[in-house]
Image 1 (cartoon, rainbow, N blue to C red):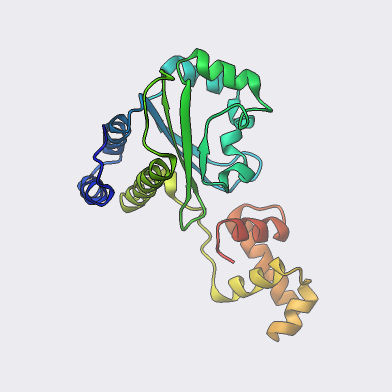
Image 2 (image 1 turned 90 degrees about the vertical axis):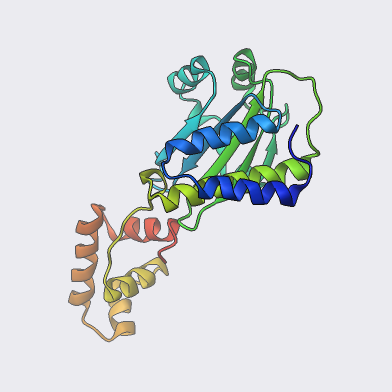
Length: 240
């Protein structure tokens, strides 16, 4: 059973994550922590907001390999309700028939692979990357911590995992890089507000040709087809 005193557990858990020196150690630490919470498996997913159609996603997990193979083969990323933005905003997601109402085949497949009881806790990093810590167990029996306390512990574990990956400069939490000058950022901000090149030129007291020059330069830097995509990406990752 987990340590009952939350604040004592919090101090010890923080120390455990602070002692991590390699990203691979996060798997061992999370496995130990989630087992103490009476769960057999965990998966920690880091999902970036861009690219919009196929967001960059990284996963560390102790799920059965057969389930991971099935998940990728069936492209369950596209239907997993845990990954939907509207569900992510709820924060704590107990796995139940309501959550999987639109994807019963997916829910049946998960249970067939031993993931019969579980929940997901969602957090957000400063770079707008979503951190999703899911825990699961094979047995439907056994008493767990109350949901409010379980949510608080999973939230802290997910936060510490994101913070540790960032401290170790792991690529999975790296934000989209956009090295922009002060003038480029100003133009990008006004582009995001829907202003035309002519309007931006008036606002910044520069020529329209100068505005267009900077916009084309930003397109080259970011390998973007147009100025709209640059503004959308910048807004998604918190640059503007």
